[in-house]
Image 1 (tube, rainbow, N blue to C red):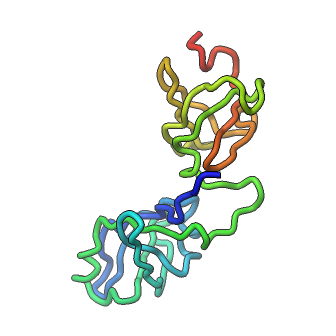
Image 2: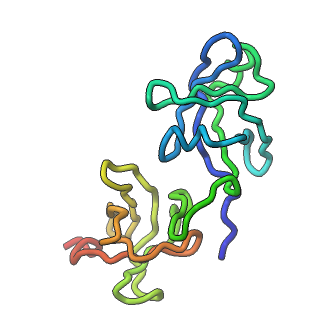
Length: 176
């Protein structure tokens, strides 16, 4: 299995909050509460990420995070971190069997599940968009993009870092 990225984007600092180093974060997780469960975040580009201990994280306005990091003690230090993308270590999450990170699906080949693992290649997952009832996989095909709901009726199997098998309805991938 290909090596999966050890760090996952989990949010972005969008503003300061107060004068004691508080920061307003837009969390990029299933829920803001999931972000608040983290003990640390990582900052940096590429493979060079530095851990930062979370002193306090709480949900604000039902959607954002009020974040206090160790070593960020005033408004100037917090302001210097504005627009910083925050990362979480993959090892800090405990997924149940069958669960995976949506970022691990992007770039994977998509096969027709009706023809087995080595069946017809339908395309490649280009992106995953959040939806109201479920996420939508955007699949690049030779004839353009196709959006497929990430529900069991369509997604037969996902092996993170390897492939996705879908059970499409007739005409979905052949442009009929």
